[in-house]
Image 1 (cartoon, rainbow, N blue to C red):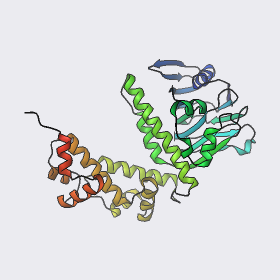
Image 2: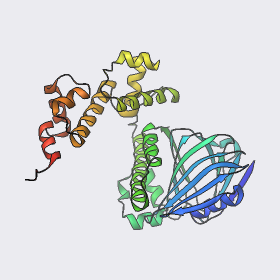
Image 3: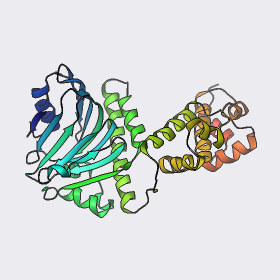
Image 4: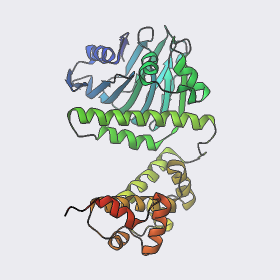
Length: 344
């Protein structure tokens, strides 16, 4: 096992202390730093960006070849950590807890953690396991000062965590599986633009991911998260089906067909779509087709009838009705506005 002592005062200092043990080189472009490693201890990268509103992004995309323990002293740098494992898993305990009280951050799980002043956090990363971990860190005093957020709108527990600027209390929330977060974090990792535009897009996605963590915690306290007996592997099957529908909305999908293809019962399919997308299977298919139709109207020269049939509807009148119900405007009027004025 390799232990890394972290007593830095910032995210950058944290990554540099990790580098001092596992090696690698740090590069920087437009305020985005990347530690790249390829040696006997690790292969992959750790990147971080610090924004001026008290928020930092820290992402692991790495495989360690030895069990790694991060012993993090919270007396110098103690942000709120909003964590999510896109691939793999890791573990955590507070310094005042016993070894048997270690908790696992499972794949696809939303986790919120902060320590108390002077305490320790211990992070455990397994060897020979590909890790893709997203961590959003909030420095409370800077966040409250710069962003002027109305934190009083948060539920009481998170409100107290955000206002605990003297770090008097520890806090840990290990939430339910959330594949919507997986989709959003995957989108963040796929940003391919460069320079200032890239940083701005990443910053926007970071804010969205943060809001999704907070929203999930709020729903959990209010018992608004649908109860589910589905396994994580079954939820992944549902997510893959949903991605397939997005890629090809024109296919004549049926519940029977999707159940047979997935190996899940119709009841489990319906439950999975309600948990992940708050829609039944039929409602989800209709939603995706309408989103595709809207994009076709914006970006192509197809007429409305051509669009209707290209996305799997058979009735233009039915399509027009549900399009107007969803967007508050008829497809024809939307197309007119999308085209804009014609130059003469």
